[in-house]
Length: 207
Image 1 (cartoon, rainbow, N blue to C red):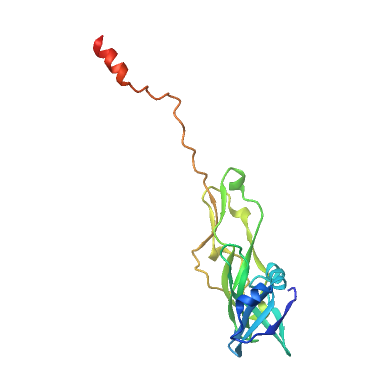
Image 2 (spheres, helix red, strand yellow):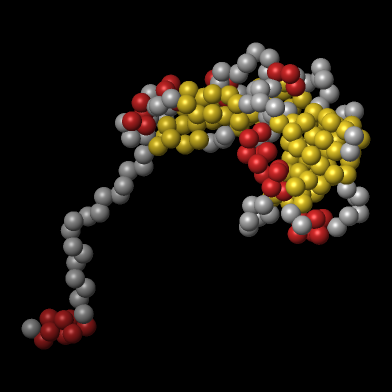
């Protein structure tokens, strides 16, 4: 598994977060079963680069002060309009103890149903699992070639999940479906009947 790391600074709990964000700093917090909650701030650009590679399923070495601990990105908040991160939670790992996390799905292969005109609908891009930190993986592959007919789908229970993981996402939840395309309503070639105007009614009456 790829190694990731990021540096942070300890933040006073009463420090103005709005001021930090204007300075391109991202407020954060780290906590865990055996880790007291500590407020932090880190470079917003550094975190964006990290998130694009690590997601929520890669162990990160979080360095602050004299500390260097293994964490996962547990939760985050984004500004609704810009999409910028405005806060992030890190969860400190305890070796030998299972954790709950989201694993990214990587869709591979080609669906025969899609070749025949089906519309591929990816209903989710990640699943939740319980796993030991040492057994974490970057992603789980989803083979689309099994979708051979219209409306065929792949459920969470059908994913090729390593035996070291326990699936927490509902087994019957549909991950992806090769949906049958909706028929375009046929437009009638017949021209609508002309409306009879008041003048035409008068002419008809006079006749």
